[in-house]
Image (cartoon, rainbow, N blue to C red):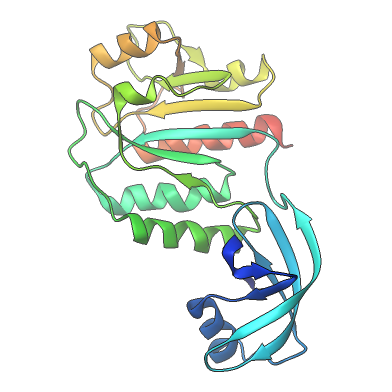
Length: 239
């Protein structure tokens, strides 16, 4: 399996790419690359690049671009998932990693009425996203927003806007049936915290044009619900 490296757009100049320090260390110290070796670099904004290494040293590793492709490994739709911040950071980080693998375009950490945590380690989260992007063969790094209040996210534009709701006292659409009934290109799905959305938040979302969806008869953990949602989009559009 070919190891994929990450270099942000500012690392590219006139057909040359200089690897960031941590990626350079991995290329030289771990993988023992030498001048003349070919590697693959993704830039996180849709570019997939095949390079030939020309300079490999302790302080600088750079190569010349031989081939460029765009949107390698990317789905045909744009899915934004808003997931409430969770009490256990590890669960939220699991969602971040798997969301990359499942093709999620953007992630919005939500602050809701029942959210017990309002912050997360943003730089650590970004490292997780980069590692997952390289591992799964994508070329775009999902956008990771700062935590947003629930009400602010209701104005986010999307052609399809859904809210996952577990309570049985409200009419809901089965998610997979709904996705099979309409073309999908740009969607926003909101998933609540451990205690779900508060009744007033559900009402706010409906008033803003969100459709309530069901993920089945079982009660799911929040991160599981978010990942099932991403999986449903993948199955319904990319197979």
